[in-house]
Amino acid sequence: MIVLCGCGITVSLMHTLVAPLLPEISHTMHLSQDAASWLLTVTMLAGAVCAPVCGRLGDMLGKRRMLAIALAIMSAGSLLGALSWSFESLLGARLLQGAAFGVLPLGISILKDELPADRVMAGTATMSSTLGVGGAIGMPLAGVIAQLMNWHAVFWAATAVSLLVLALVVAFVPESPVRSGGRFDVVGALGLAAGLVSLLMAVSRGGTWGWGSPAIVGLFAGAAVAMTLWAVHQLRVRQPLVDLRTSARPVVLLTNTATTLVGVGMFASFMMTPLMLQASTATGHGHGVSVMVAGLCMVPMGLGMLFFSPLSAKLSARRGAHVTLLVGTLVMVVGNVAQALLPGSIPLLMVVLMVLSIGTALCFSAMPTLIMAWVPVTETASANSLNSLLRTIGTSTCAAIGGTLLAVYTTRVDGAVVPSSTGFQVTFWMAAAASLAAAGLALAVTAVIRRSARTTAEQTDVTGTVAARTGMMAQ
Picture: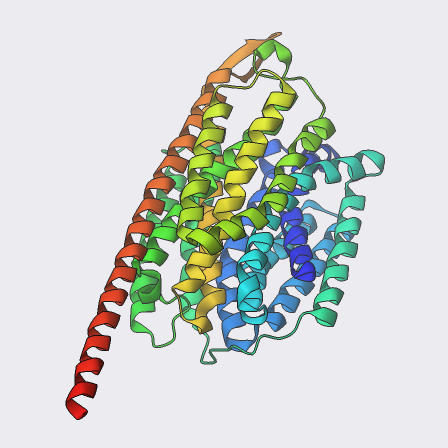
């Protein structure tokens, strides 16, 4: 479990380590800010496409094998980034690093197969929390390394860590005995890739290219057509990439939908808080700190997720994962409302971030548990990968809308145009609304589970009564 959690932290680090390096990379390579932002976009696209593919191949061929392959690809990408000589080579490095996004759902599925039943919830909760831990410490860590040396050193450090976790996986993680076998759905993988790339490109670039521009409208239309054809193919093929019939089960469908909304509710703080911390105090909402200090202020949020994950496992064991999800979403509502009120001091802001970390930890631990309880044991990796993909769609949507709001609501400070308080407030209110909607879905999940339990109990009573009468007649 320790090794797999290390893998989760490492992969989430890869997704955030470039963010504080963009200004230096833009200056060194003479790039515009829009061009440099592709170093973030391409990683997200690669991760979205590779996660379901890794999940399905893990169910078929072995989860540990696919985990090692994904980490090897990530290591190659990190090494290429350290040796990069042009923007194109660096872009390729980030593409390879993004291919490891499937590590987290693969690790959760391995824990489900290998741990004793009474430790699965705790293991899943801890593994899920690593996404927040890596995301929170990635920015300050990369900023410190880049400040002491240069951005190439960040990739060298990433290479060393990637190779270390790969060696630990080979040495200590057993291969899961649960495999589905079968044939890989190549057509389904290509169709899903086309749909996801079109959708996430439109979402991530809409604020830059214009939401009503022909390119963005065309991408949304292409995504709709591609995903429709893909869904038809998945329903017809014997061994689909994603079993849509299983995904349509009420608990799975409601949990996956809630996952997208939780992604929105969680990512608003990850995206907006560093900007608020670095903004000038003259704006009325900024705190005027450096990039490194802003990153350090985010660390408690990641550590809070790690420390509160055991609590979420205990709550799920006693009351059920559906109750944990409901409590987590409600806590996220409170945290986002507090953020929308724009805390006036850094200590108060860190308290609010801790509240959000508790809610996020509860949600992240509950969602995989719910998914794995309602899908066949041979499909846990692909089901968790789909859940992770939907969370990515939520965070990408939050980033796109939040960026647009900051561009729309501006003010002037010392002659410069900067985001106003309104843009931050509207974004946090949006995140609070998304969290509240996720709470509504969690209530629906609770209702479905309780109705299913009542039905099962009634069937058991009927079966027991029939058996008793049959026994009496025999006597």
